[in-house]
Length: 247
Ligand SMILES: C[S@@+](CC[C@H](N)C(=O)[O-])C[C@H]1O[C@@H](n2cnc3c(N)ncnc32)[C@H](O)[C@@H]1O
Image (cartoon, rainbow, N blue to C red; front, side, top):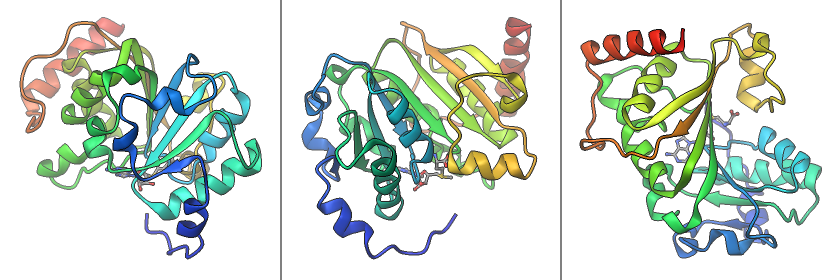
């Protein structure tokens, strides 16, 4: 979705002590940026305007959050949304401007995150060769594995059936077990559910939201994730097996 340029976003972010566009300089030391480094660290990949982020951070002062996005314009909105709910200087929230495709340069194993949120990332379904840009593609999962703690989780939501199914396969192959799955989040009764800007839009249009929680297995996956391409055979076989396992 294209958003009109927000002239105020850059100056407001530049004046914000809990925003950075230089995540690489904090690599391995993210926890020390919070007043309580020992608290759980939850990361949001592609936070957009931070509607759900702000609500989570306000409800959970005992958790440290880093919300990442590529766009300064949306991060400017996220800053305002968070300031409205958590105050001008939230102790437990940091905003990060970065390209998540290279997130392994920003977080290190020592950062040890407990959880990653990915909500309504671009599905990249138009051409198979674009699938590697998905935030759930193996080349991303391999990076997330490097800085998630053992037993760490990915919480993934989307409106898109193809992206969801493909992601189930990617996650299975790259060492994440589903511990919760629903094809209709609103009807599932899962709580608390923090509704993001895009989620609200799809819910209003009557599109069921697909959601899963995936826990990292200790053993790493085999193979090169960077060019991984899901073939129809592997996809069908893996989906059948997952259906059987989850039945
Ligand atoms: C469809 S929006 C979803 C925003 C929010 N999570 C929600 O559910 O409302 C996707 C967001 O991901 C961000 N994004 C897409 N690719 C990215 C990348 N490679 N690195 C960082 N952010 C990215 C976009 O800028 C956009 O804000």
